[in-house]
Image 1 (cartoon, helix red, strand yellow):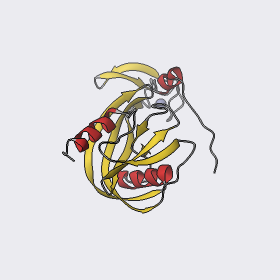
Image 2 (cartoon, rainbow, N blue to C red):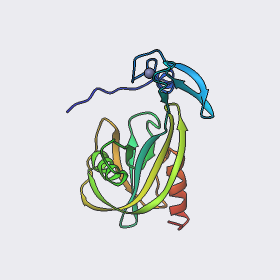
Image 3 (cartoon, rainbow, N blue to C red):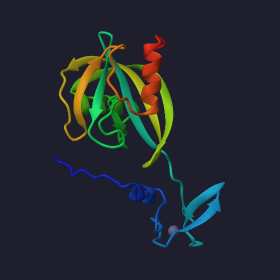
Length: 184
Ligand SMILES: [Zn+2]
């Protein structure tokens, strides 16, 4: 199904992080109060007292190799438009992180990967808010290079001495540096 491209401006992204205007439990206008150590959106209705806890987003990515080369995608969207990174994206509610990484890789590159390990778990902040990126290690076990033109301009396999530029995301830079140094 075709989906409309939807890009948040920085101001819109900031607004989504300010929390609910109305209580999702009882509909009362929410207030900002200092509770549990931080300013949070709180329902002032004494019968309700719903507190909104804002969480980081979860993303998954896969450092997938084939014959000593690593799979990268060139992004068509911000953040990092025009830059290269590992295939990955936001985790859905109804899937495991491993399944998320496998799905994102298939959608963005056409390749089937098998998860073989965990590289690391990274924290990041950008204009959309904060997030946790789970970086898996994987190997390509099938499929062939295609790409999702909405998100990805092109797909490539690169050896440690032939990486394209620029690479985006601190987690990707750290992982590739470790790989080039023979530590992965
Ligand atoms: Zn309420």
